[in-house]
Image 1 (cartoon, rainbow, N blue to C red):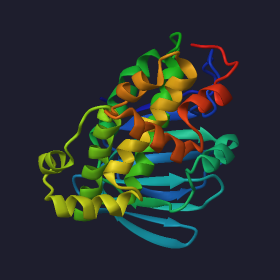
Image 2 (tube, helix red, strand yellow):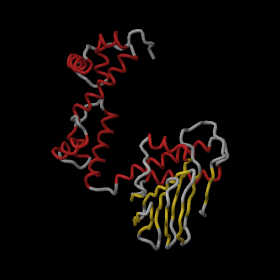
Image 3 (cartoon, helix red, strand yellow):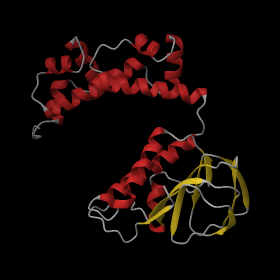
Image 4 (cartoon, rainbow, N blue to C red):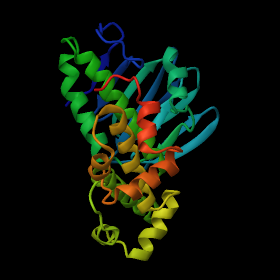
Amino acid sequence: MEYIHLNMTNVPRRLRFPLPVHSLGYIPHSQPQKGRNVYSGKIEFCIRLGSPGEEFARDIFEGEEFKTPFPHVVVKPPDVEHYYEVKDGREAFYVTYPESVIPALQKAGFGLRPFLWEIVVSSRMTDWMRRLKELFGASRETGVAEQIDLLSFALLEEMFFARQGPVTEENFQEKKIRRIASHLQLHYKEDVEVGTLAAENGFSRRSFFRHWNAVYRTSPFQHVQSLRLAEAERLLCDSDMPVDAIAEQVGFVDSSYFIRLFRKRCGMTPYRYRLRVAGGRERR
């Protein structure tokens, strides 16, 4: 694919996404160059994917020099002096936003510093870029601008998630713990054997609990109980199911035990909760 720059400023949208893209583009192989740049009225987020002849990129922001290995993200805020040098061709993908949305970006957690950080290009990041490139030739078609806005935001999100740094043993174990928590989120109604789940993810029972406690404040057992009780609250509000049936539905074999736990969590029995919280509320 050749170099493509897509200006989105005058492309009409039917839906008002709060972060409309100003422009975006793909550079398969930039030319050697160096120079000075100061953006006005926009902010750019660029993924520098790699260079066949450079181990790192050299940039100067506000007088400070950076030497950053590929791949990495570079943020180019408005009114910031940026000197750069490209010794060999680089592959890059960039998205720019109008300066007016910077407060919204910052409020959402997307800071303007640091200017650069190394990343590991995730499969999701690759997929978002591929899908955006597929839309380059259809930007004026109905609904495509909105898709570009959404996919660009997903890509931006991945850039910032990647700012956590290269994969280490510590965050690799955390990723596995969160994968287990996601499994529990889907299967909390079942009788889950934690030891088996830990072993399937490469943990001994002891190491599993050590890594779990580093990520979550409650035990896996308490985590599952909390999910079950939250679903019970929903069912008490949104259904006419008897309390015993709700207890069984969310995974409790003993309804008396369920009632004790529910009272401890909510300060009242399920019966009183239904009357007080769900009373008078339309059933769905």
